[in-house]
Amino acid sequence: MDPPRSGDPKIAGLADRTTALVGWTIAWRATSAIATLALGALLIRQLPADEYGRYTFVLSVLVYIALLATFGQDQGLLRYLPEVLGRGDRAAANDLLRKSAIAILAVWLLTSAAVWVARPAIDSLLHAQIADLLALGTVLLLGGIAAGVLSFALVAIYDMRSQAIATPIAGALTLALAIVLLRLGHGLGGVLVAGAVGQSCLAGFYLFILLRRIRRAEGVVGDRVGWRRLLVYASGWLPSLLIASAVGLQFENIFLLRFSGSTAVAYYDTGYSIPQRLVALIPSLLTGAWVVGTLEGWRRESQRVRASVMAFYKGIFLVAFPLAFAGSALMAPVVRLYTAGRLPPAEQIAPVMLLFFIAALLATPWGLVVRVRELAWLNALITIAQLGFAALADFWLIQVFGLSGAVAAVGLTTALTLILTFVAWRAVDRATLAIPWGYAGRCLLAASPYLLLLPLAFVRLPTRALLIVAFALVALTTVA
Image 1 (cartoon, rainbow, N blue to C red):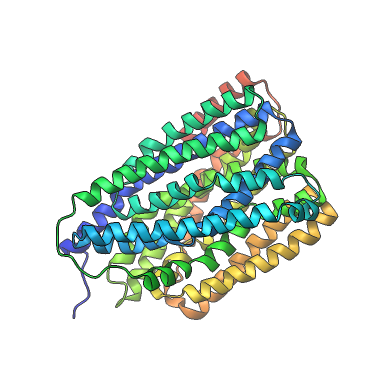
Image 2 (cartoon, rainbow, N blue to C red):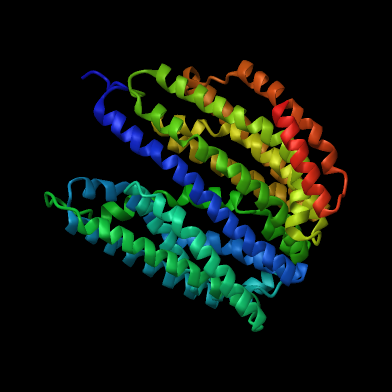
């Protein structure tokens, strides 16, 4: 059989639908980030630094618990929902949703019970009073889990528009409710309740959209997705997702809380999360190229994968150099405005973290090769090595150097990840490893005028003067 060509109507249709998701994906991520940052800005101004540190630590752990309690059902829906809806099988789609809901409820109940029972041990281990708050957050987590899983279901039916529209509304509801509950004296528990209400409303809206789509399905009734098939596939994602999240969700927070206290967690989390959310938008910008490169006959022609990798790198270089130069200059002032100057160490951390995250983008196209060459096992080994190294580096460096040790650990882990990625890539699929260094050099030169912004990183100006100068310099350097 001849490999599919780019002009094939089926290939073109899939590419068009997937590429159409890019704009709405960016809008969804941007509105989600804005909603989260708005709540964070409120809490920084309302809470002492140590209390805000407790909140950010609990939130990081809750994200990890949510991933565990989801039990891979988001991936299961993403995999099987298009299959059953593609043939118009309404009964199979409803059955799949029921099974996913049962699995999630069972794991959530077990997780909530485990955290509740382990409260004394948690406080004793971390030398901090956070266990009761963590137990409350775990119980309230169900709405957030449902919203996360159903968001994958909407992606499976090519609906990012609903998420992009609903997310800021849910964020505004959460923010308003958090303000009310804080003024009523409910503290961090009230903030968690506000978040649970917002996420539950979001989940309800997503479910309404999904069920409406399922009700319109009319087609051939076929085999349903069995329990074994669903659980084996979904649970297969857990190890790599949990390991990646342990590294990506401020793994250093655990050691900072243990050895340096919750105030250090507040500094680190703020300096980490703002640049992380900014850099996370870049892969969204390149989703279209990623999908097209995956679709166009990669099974037969390595050159097609190589071309997709080069296109991916060009997209990275085009955005990364201006972001690195301008971001290094403006990140500290942005954090200062965001925190109202209450967390000075975060201002020093953020520009360094931004450069680490941008450097890590060099490994992103490896994910394309992992997908098309079915090398998930090799990627899992890299992730395991990354986790082990990060844990050891954090444990030693944070004990000795505190907050600066946590920053150094991120840099060392990033360097190790890049080394392992390129060694593995070169060993197993050298033909697709193609980095357009000449194009990178041209992008670097084109972005060099943004270096004129660097003095803003070292000068403390009043807010109004800072905004005027920053806008003027950005406009000038962009024209240059």
